[in-house]
Image (cartoon, one colour):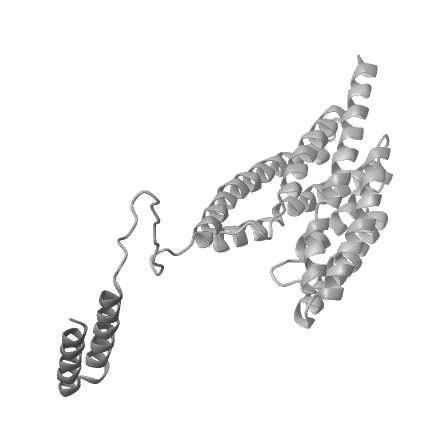
Length: 287
């Protein structure tokens, strides 16, 4: 029975690695947009810095436990890719955002992680050390799942899903399911519990995406509709043709148009009277 459980644990761990691999790659479209715009306006660095810190913590926790090789593999890749994301963000960010990101890096990655390693190494031993680090990992894993809430708030505020990649939400949800069962089968609740929240937030983000993406499509369609109110549409009917005008009728229409234009723009009644006489004389001559 234990062997059967081990096989399932390994299976969920491998699936968790595969899906988490795509989770780490899913922000690539976001950074492609940043590269095209040469600006990080509208994007936040907090999720990537927190994810980097969390990956480093999980690697440390995995080295304190047994049978956690699959945690080491995926989080090593996570550290690498999140470092690239943060560096890319810093490169294109304006000065204020760049300074804030560097401060956050120093606070969490250097100060925070360094302090956790030093304190747990010198003050705790054995299983207690692993338990303390596990609790810390649990808390910061929750922070990783909560971090996208700033993006959720922006989506609700702007009613636009431009800054919330749909693929990231899908892969986060699937990843949360796999790692939940992996932790549950290992009887490691430090791994299982955060992924319950991850699943909930993943579903929430997908629901918001569907809601506001539909609204964006409606707005785009309305903007693309031609404004017919300022246009004159002439319908041609081959069966019903307009009667042809005689030369005399055409001359009278042109003179009438000149008369109306003169009256409208200048209000010269004498000129109007003269035009009437001219029209009358021309009609007499033609008759």
